Length: 399
Ligand SMILES: Cc1cc2nc3c(=O)[nH]c(=O)nc-3n(C[C@H](O)[C@H](O)[C@H](O)COP(=O)(O)OP(=O)(O)OC[C@H]3O[C@@H](n4cnc5c(N)ncnc54)[C@H](O)[C@@H]3O)c2cc1C
Image 1: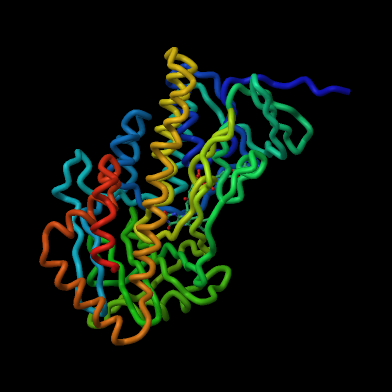
Image 2 (image 1 turned 90 degrees about the vertical axis):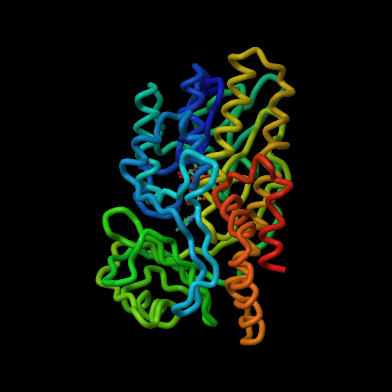
């Protein structure tokens, strides 16, 4: 028996931050959208915890900023440290934006706020619906779900994460490799005199550890390790902080609220579009969590793509407008993959001589205001509008 297809203008596969942002913006522009996610319910884990200035600027359009700011914690500064010494300080507080800071908020909270906005706009996520296959023709695309149901759409967007079925069905390559190290993540409570509204990246011979404040008095710990346990416990996290963190005023972990490990790849999709199928977010690019860029880049992809699709479907723009999505966004992801790769390499320099040289260079660069500003522009995403100037600051530090 032939299955009768549901029909929609835009099918969004995946309801992470990328799919939710896209869905809300398309609903806002009056586009008929169907959002499916294979998970039975939304993920309730912390994951990405940083929202940068450019993302906040763009989320104005979605109408979620007030709620994100109410829930999040404003942090105006990143520092790179070794032991008790700050090697370089990156200040966000004089950036040319109405959000001169990073906002710390766990990903499940960000997703909750986006979902609530989507619901206000009359949208919803269809949970437990997994896209198994995709085919397209001149007039549209047809998605077959694992329960055998079929959805016919004018356009399909794969916001289905790193292992994207949409990307694979469209035959788009995902070029890159995996990092050797794993990353440990833990949201903890600390007994720590040095606690302040600052993200601290500690460089140490054994590897990187990041200590970042979160709302509610918690801290996010991120560290590179050779092999991480599945759920790093208090003793494991404490040992990392003792070895790599502050020495004079050490941080004592009093509770691990959530912990995880993940292996990171640096990969970029060979293209962002195949006919009527687009990819966005982790489906299109993955990279090191250094600098907290992943979710931000995905949300910005969604904003760009929503604008193009709505212009074509509602604004009478020519279909060629859609080509601009890839030409705008793929170079940005290439830059982010490069930036985070360089930052990771910088943090994990091996050998005492090279480490001393790196620290001396960072110390010198810390006294050149233009370098700190360029790093702040890069990390905040504000350099994106001028991508040509975005790379040199990183090259100067890492070369
Ligand atoms: C453990 C962990 C820790 C992380 N920590 C950080 C961090 O510290 N900093 C940082 O910047 N980033 C971090 N990240 C990465 C960050 O979470 C991602 O960059 C972000 O979630 C990307 O959003 P997305 O919407 O593109 O994809 P995702 O959040 O991956 O969402 C994809 C969605 O698609 C759904 N889906 C997948 N396949 C299908 C299918 N076939 N059919 C239907 N639905 C499907 C999934 O269920 C999921 O809901 C972390 C990721 C993990 C897993």
